[in-house]
Amino acid sequence: MPHLELSGISQSFRRADGSLHRVLAECSLAIERGEFVSIVGPSGSGKTTLFNVIAGLAAPQSGTVAIGGVPVDGPSARVAYMLQKDLLMPWRTTLENVTLGLEIRGVPVREARRRGGELLERYGLAGSEGLYPGALSGGMRQRAALIRTMVLEPEIVLLDEPFSALDYQTRLMLEADVRRIIHERGCTAILVTHDIDEAVSISDRVVVLGGKPASVKLDVQIELTVEGTHTPATAREAPEFRRYHKAIWEQLEVTLPGAA
Amino acid sequence: MTTDAKRLRAALPRQAVTGSPWLRHAAVPAVQVTIAAVVIALWQFGADAHLVNGQLFGTPAGIVAAARRTFADGSMAVDTTATVYETVTGFVLGTLLGSVAGLMLWYSRFVARVVEPAAVAFNAVPKIALGPLIIIWLGAGTESKIVLAFVSTLVVAFLAAYGATREVDADLVTLLRSIGASRWQIFRKLLLPSAMPFMFAAMRINVGFALVGAVVGEFISSQRGVGHAVFVAGNLFDLNTVWLGILELSTVAAIMYALLARCERLLVKGRT
Ligand SMILES: Nc1ncnc2c1ncn2[C@@H]1O[C@H](COP(=O)(O)OP(=O)(O)OP(=O)(O)O)[C@@H](O)[C@H]1O
Ligand SMILES: [Mg+2]
Image 1 (cartoon, rainbow over the protein chains, first blue to last red):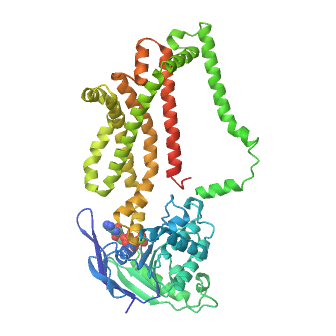
Image 2 (cartoon, each protein chain N blue to C red):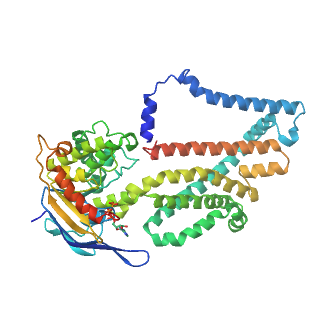
């Protein structure tokens, strides 16, 4: 049984003039436990909309989402959502930000602090526990947001362009961390990105959304021959890299408006 | 951006700063005190030399005498206590009720849309124009002054809190919802702390409004209070006592600001 199964998801929004704006049409996708899948697609193709449906924040117009065979009908503790903005609360210290979700789930404060502190230490933010977000760099902030996500011990992690606001170097570093952490914890991950290089180098599989309304245009398994350990940097050197890049780019180009 | 600027400043050599830290911190108050002393001395000298009409402007010595007199006969204590009581009670009630009502509108977009135009319109009314009405309804006692201070602060607190609820980051709400937060948890963990700076800004404005409300109420009709003392002294052309009242009111305002700043430091964290 797939870990996450989307069957025939359609979603529409009502425009101001009352007409229906169809965003997603019959999207189906099955993701196995432990898979790292990237979703790419033009802006406005409904990637965030799809995430909101998976996270149980919005019911789809039609279709079903099932996690481990159980239909989703609201926010679930098995899914964690990380957005593009780090969304750290400026009035909370790094540690307090990291334990936010545990607090909401009713974990006792001391237990929450212990777990948060442990992950901060393990993932390179030791010493920042007591700092307010204003004193952290962009990369540190996004790392804190990642830890806030992972401390909830989700089975499925939804990453909505979490790297897009970072500079290239920080980005490669954080990509490597995310990939390693997700694998280490045996999570299933879905990453939305506009960066094809990022999608190919980090994922086991890339899905292209396109069309109006959007549906799955392409679904490729990524198999790279990487020398040494797999990192976003070494993966970009793999001989197959360009081929995947081209295949995805061609799918995207067709759906780009005004591409002649 | 700001953190970069901060780091840059930290990295720069400090040679630009000269002198001992004590001197730097003491310099500003020292200059302020000196200027005040010079002005007071010139004023007194001018009055003594008949260059300034002491009858029309009062004199520093006269103000000191008025202070001694009102202190000795106990009226200073009675009047300031009355005004502080009215101001603080009105301020606290107005701030609490206004803020709670404003924050509550977050729960209902519908009620918010109904209430907002009325609040904006009421905000534009100079509240002291309600003074005669309130005094007719509630009498010349303390209650009418409290109510005037209360209505003077209510709408400012309300609009600030309501405005704050609209500034809340929608993505943060999404994040909290995805974690499974209830509406009450979102209110407590997100809305309240992010509204705090807005509410403190409103409170700083409202210190002045509450004082104006109480004092104007005392002007219109009262038996005691700093406003009462100033009003009576003004009618008698006792300018020294008027000045004394103004000094007392400034002191009350300054103390309230200081207390407010302390509360803000305790409650609003992590902002630089
Ligand atoms: N709550 C909503 N109400 C109305 N329209 C919406 C709503 N949410 C999304 N849309 C519309 O649905 C379409 C898809 O939006 P979505 O945010 O899912 O795109 P996206 O693929 O995530 O884009 P981007 O890459 O820019 O983040 C857009 O046209 C958007 O205007
Ligand atoms: Mg999006």
